[in-house]
Amino acid sequence: MWRYLIRRLNLFIATSIVMMAVLFFATGMFPVEKGYALTGIQFPTEEQQVQTVEDYKLDKNQFSQFYAYVTQRLSGNLGISVNSQQDVAEELSAVLPASFELSLFAGCIAVFFGVPLGVLASLSSSKPVQRSILAITLTGYSIPVFWLGLTLALWFGVQLEWLPISGQINLLYEIEPVTRIMLIDTLLSESSYSMSAFKDALLHIILPAVTLAVLPFTVVIRITRQAMVTVMTQTYIRAAEARGLSTYRILIRHALPNALIPVLKAFGLMLGSFASYGIIVEVIFAWPGVGSWLINAIYQRDYTVIQAGILSVSLLIIFLSIMIELLHTTINPINRKELYAD
Image 1: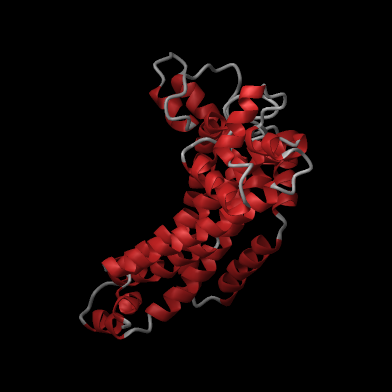
Image 2: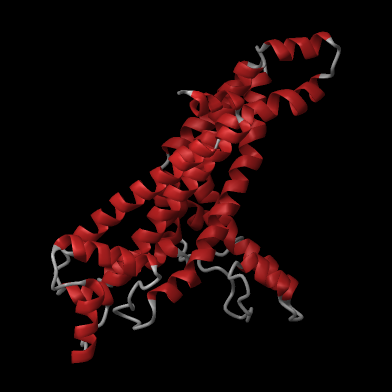
């Protein structure tokens, strides 16, 4: 098992280095002076210029510059924002929890509704039910996320006025940031309107979370259905039926846990698509996360924020993908054959 962990750690390091190399060379192609693109200091003093050259080895060869770039970024020095002149690392730490909140809420929606529909599609003998679920899956997978987000905002936000269509919470509520996850901070708040603020934050997250959940929702339905069809034909399921166990007990204790293993792997494979969809959703609903922060930086040519946003999202996707793979290998004995392949 330790050999497997070391392999995955090496994979994470190698992939991260390649990604940072691509980002480093792309930074050199920005249409500005390289020191400005790396630090965000628009009018540096003579001392700052000397410090920038020393920190990033701009007077050395490309390899030395790349090594200095990686050292600075991994140490937490992401420069300052060109527009706000604030530390980029602090801005990133302020917007990252909102993206986590939206992604986690959307993932819970996808699993909570997708798994039961996938099980129903696999166990139901009714052709209309199977075809209806299949139609929902294909439709949800085919709909462009930007069109879906705008349509939901138009229907439920503008025409029906049921749900808010922008922001994380009403600006009338003053909630002290503790975790920077609004649903948690409203509950931790000691103000008299904490429950009212929690309900308002919950209403704000529904539309963007539902929009973002459509892709994983359709994938969960399809993977769960395929896995359940395969699992229900296994010998241990037939043995459980022969022992007289109820269908509910067989489903909950034996079939479903094994059917959810491929769902976990599918989540790891679609992290990249999920992240790109999340950026679009955050822009549509003005959600104060990494996606909208990054897009605004691109519009305003904020080079240090662009680098920090791409770096953080990429490293996070790589890390979570490897962690999901490790978890999948741990709970799936069949997949452990790679541990003993030699």
